[in-house]
Image (cartoon, rainbow, N blue to C red; front, side):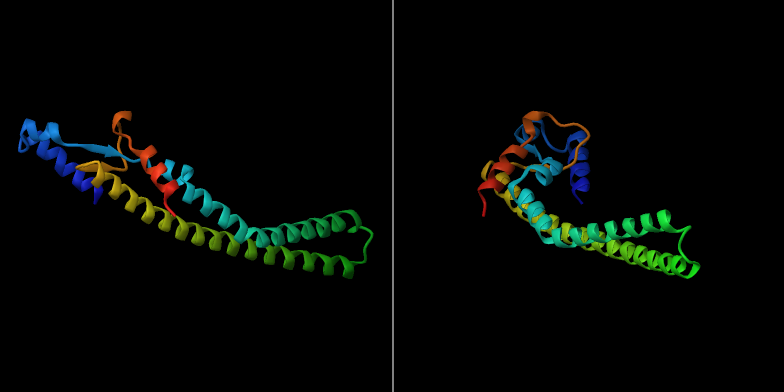
Length: 168
């Protein structure tokens, strides 16, 4: 949708529909969405929140991984001296724990990605509100988020980051 507006504006400028005076009055800004995602205060808060939320599960996964490694080490070390039944029992247990670990690890990644996407959606909703406020207060006609080239002169990312840091 944003690209359509940019293409239409470019076509209008190229087609001469907008007069030179109108084009000179056109005020365009650029936002680096990746920087907002990395450097904004709300993004940092969201990252810390997710780390805190998922830390217990991550610790449980590490413990389980260490148990699997220990069991695997015992099998490698004592496998030849164990009875056939004990060896099979430990191999079965190792296989069961490995599958359980992989399942829990997959669920962890899926849940983390889901929560990260929720936090990103919230962040960009807030960022879009701030971008709109900056655009209206500074009388911008167009703000784009993606461009092949942009002049640093039109980059308003720092202003948006500053506004996001003061917003509650």
